[in-house]
Image 1: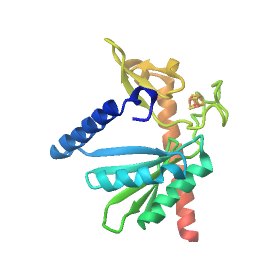
Image 2 (image 1 turned 90 degrees about the horizontal axis):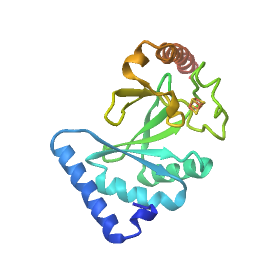
Image 3 (image 1 turned 30 degrees about the vertical axis):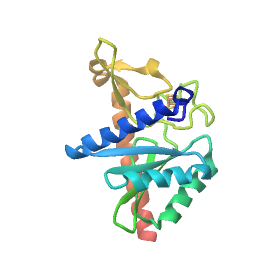
Length: 203
Ligand code: SF4
């Protein structure tokens, strides 16, 4: 709603109404709805609080760190958490992908997530990638995604920055890359389990 295309308040209002109707229809039919909201800095705190207030019952809200804004973004997420009196319940780390999140419980029992990124790179594919540095690839490896080519087959991608790596589903399941993805996840699951078992014992 904030892009130049939505400079017309009428068009933005229509889009927001459509969004409300979508959320209502989904929840009325038992479809789980989640909303990812990027928070660049403290100037967005009020906007996020309004969204949580308005939709937080029907929608699971996930605040996302803005990779370009780093510390300012994390600080703003903390401001939302403090304002709501949210209590951290668990930390979820996804093995084999850069996703990690903290689950919070709000005083009225609702759930709120704060998502951030941890360094994760595919051992073979990312090593040879021209974007493999902290500036060009801040998100890292985020997991596989399924696409449908226009009038074509289902495709599997491993990186939104490198769509040239997409393969048809059939090709992917038989490929070395599929093996690499699965092995990376298994290795990380074992490593993280061991690491956090040690941390829990030490704590
Ligand atoms: S841009 Fe994609 S393929 Fe390249 S290093 Fe980053 S995650 Fe890996």
